[in-house]
Length: 326
Picture 1: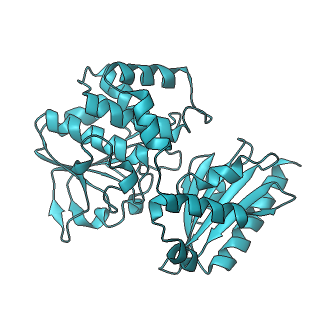
Picture 2: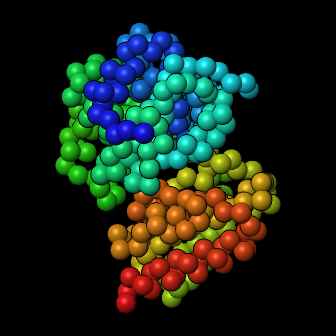
């Protein structure tokens, strides 16, 4: 395990013929945009590149240029000269990719503070709001040609992980790098429309379910909702529909944290946790349950029934919030 600069990572990859680029399961636009941009970069430098994600390419992000590069992992183990993981704080979050890929060199580029450096070479910058921002800055400083396809993917990565440039950690350089991507061919209005104003009706039904069944606890400082397997079947939703629903609960005045509990088929519950202020550390709370992420946005997978996990986690959240107020 070693911390490395982008220049060192690039040098280490020069002698590698077959490279796998991969990102975490249930990918967001930062994971996918960074994956595709990195795959194009490496391909243009003459490498034989494969891009994997356990869930493949979700429908809602299929508009991203070169989205067909991202496929699901092979059924058997495949050997590569190097594996580059992006936006993935824990190796197990690669899912089946981790066991389907064999390589003598593992490299990680990420922005999660909870990343402890599981690769041989690690470029981790938790002060960056998106992995896409790390790549954009690295490409520009290294005089790597950013194609229009790369620019759109990187812009989508930055835009979504900053909450349309609203979240904490979005600084002047974030806008400067986004402006550089626009100069490389991004149509901001079109990309934003596809990211934020193009969704299936079933997602609206999910939002209605979440708002009707929202629960407020800890003297209305915590908002939460649950999604059971029965709800999922009844509403006909897929995993990608869940993204962003929690932000509607976090937006309520007086709410300091919002939690989303999703029942999974394997006897676990997926927790998504969002904080509205930096005094409440969502990453630390999720760390109590084996998860992690960012101070303002984190998650975990917890074994137990939906009701048991909900009560356990809400109790822990309330305790943590009360400690910040004493």
